[in-house]
Image 1 (cartoon, rainbow, N blue to C red):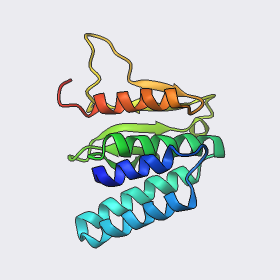
Image 2: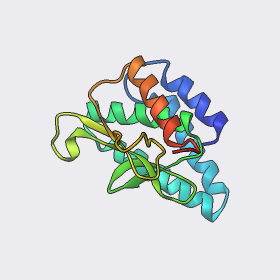
Image 3: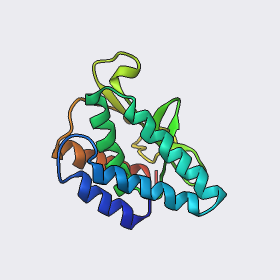
Length: 159
C-alpha cells in the first residue's frame, strides 16, 4: 500500500473495534486488484497480500482481531513494507523481500497470547541487548500507539 492507501486504511481501521468491516475488506480486495493490474510484479504482491489476509481469516476470532489491527497499523505506519506470509504467519517484508515484522497468533502454537515479532532486518537495535518480540493480548489505543512507534523504528534508516 502506498502512503495514501495506508493512511486512509488506518482511519477506517481505528474508527471501530473488532475485525475488518465489509468496507475495509472491499478496499483490500480493490488494492489487490490494483496490484495485479500492475503486471507480474504487482500480481506477486497481490498474491502475497491475499495469502496474508487468508492466514488471518483462518485464525480464531480473538487472534484474527489482533492480526487485523496489526495489519492496519503496520500498513499505515510503514507503507513501504509489503504484506506476505512467513511460515504461514502474516508478515511484512522490505523491498528486498526480507521479513521485518511478523504476527504469530496464539492458536498457532497453543500459547496464551499472540506475538508481534521483529526480524534482524528491523532497526530496533539498542546497545548490546533489545527486545524483538512482544506479547499481544488485547488491542487498545495505547497498544496501537506502541506498535506504531515500534514499526516506525523498525523501518527507520538507522539501527
